[in-house]
Length: 278
Image (cartoon, rainbow, N blue to C red; front, side, top):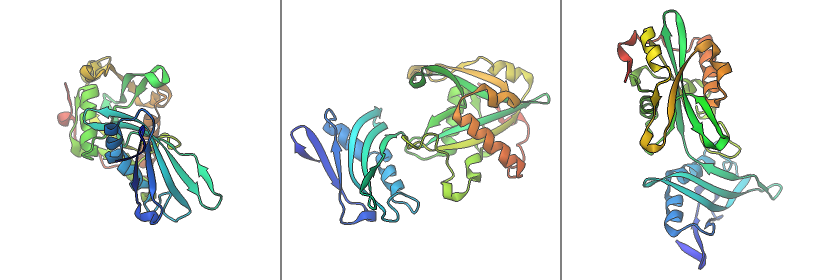
């Protein structure tokens, strides 16, 4: 790492998509050397650089160029970068103007729409969680951030078990986002104007007795040692779209209903030998 002054760290990279136009990476005041190094070596930053250079990326046709990245914040989750905030100077070559580019990078995530059939009625499983950024308790689909291993199904299964106590068979997970056109990347973007988060939405269907529905309702779950204060809610599926403001849930409903209408869903798995509630 080099320094432009005693208080500002900097680094230069060269991208294959814009040879001869080096990109300056600069740290904001207060960013330490280790934070700066962690940021530019993180999977979050590397994935963002890769995204902008793909066939559908903003640098693909040469109409735009990346000149500078200003690292503003780094939050560590143990030994890895969990959240990264930076500002990028992306220039539209035709107009010479900068395009809006403040990025909150948190990487890919997964969420699961769990539908349980019980005595002729279908129920959905939600989690109630404290969401400080919006200042509210929200009812949401079980969800979680990906780690660096890239195991989407495994992460989905693990998050469901942590947040609800439900143990699922990974083989019976249906990737709803896989039904999207390949040009979309087969992910959904809840807030692409400021955040890189891309979500894979899964479906899990099971058959259970009423005692399981009763057992789940109001159950306290989550990793308490990590500050997860979660309460499980089970709601009739037909009312789900009116009971939550969670974008993940509403997107999952839309994908599920469209896939069902077009006959894309595989047949449901056999009854609940595969479904365990801890």
